[in-house]
Image (cartoon, rainbow, N blue to C red):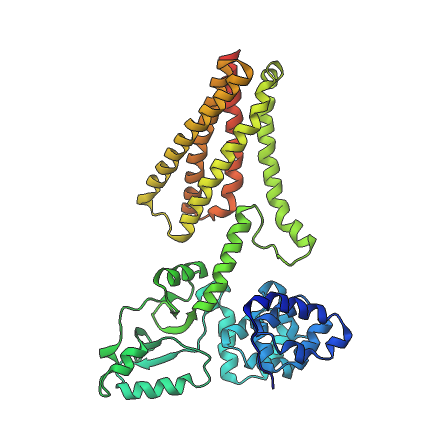
Length: 456
């Protein structure tokens, strides 16, 4: 019988890596069950993600189906764990699917070819097949795509003892549950019960008298990012999902949201760096080129615009080459200032949001920061320019250009993401490239326009 034997936490990573290396030996491959005995299903998932197909098949065939099912559900979606099922006989693959919660089963089946999926579903009871098919109809990044239809529900007009019997009956075979939901005769969500309230109530007490009606729920088509915000804001272990008529459809648990938070954070980080969210982090070079090249082309266009601006001041640069030494300083510092402002603003938008009544306050705050930083850094650059070049006019030009560009960086770094969010564009996607282009182009304009007016 398979038994997970936990080891010291500090050895887990090396333990997974050690198993990966051992599996490269044919002698070790004949002892897969014993090698995997010390691994948790999550760690087995890590091994499956980075081993050759033939070894994956051996692992799938030798471990208990309940362990393999959990490992498949824990695998990174980018590794397409559902495709592993296609290497097994349909009846074997179907037995693995049956071990999973309906939402995990739907996620795996959505990754495999339609004809093979139909084969697997044919081995399942009609009721389970209908539930899984319905889950696969929801968009992947919505509450419906995350929810598990398995939950505990009781009627509002039930006495306490009847409700307890329902909880015992419905929880049989259920992996875990945290909340008892209360519905009416039309299956509309009307409240929820805590176990403490249920156990402490008198036996004759009706559920409606002990339930909490202040229930927070999400619609089935709500975006997963909004779901994650609600669960984090209210510290909820589970969240009910309802349709537009408030009928209860399922629940989302905190472990599902942990995956969403990681996914959304990765997406925001990639977008902020000018990388498409479609890039597979484990994919090959072709996938990476496809996702990155469009953003680099946009960046090439903005850089060419900055170069065009510089070309208009060729005479100024040639007659006073020292100005060129300050170009990277002014553009670089302002670019970093804009990135700081942008990061704070985008983060605020993604966590708490910025309502219209607070938008001006955010912009003015960042503008004030830009003014203070601009005055301080502008003064430092001006003093340096005057000291090394013995020309107070050059110092004034460089200092004023630095100050003006940092003020602009604060203004653009806060205003652009807010405006993009208002028109329905993800501010993490487009803000970085736009603001970098603005600070470069206008920084050069400030520097050379002032130099033309003051020094020539």
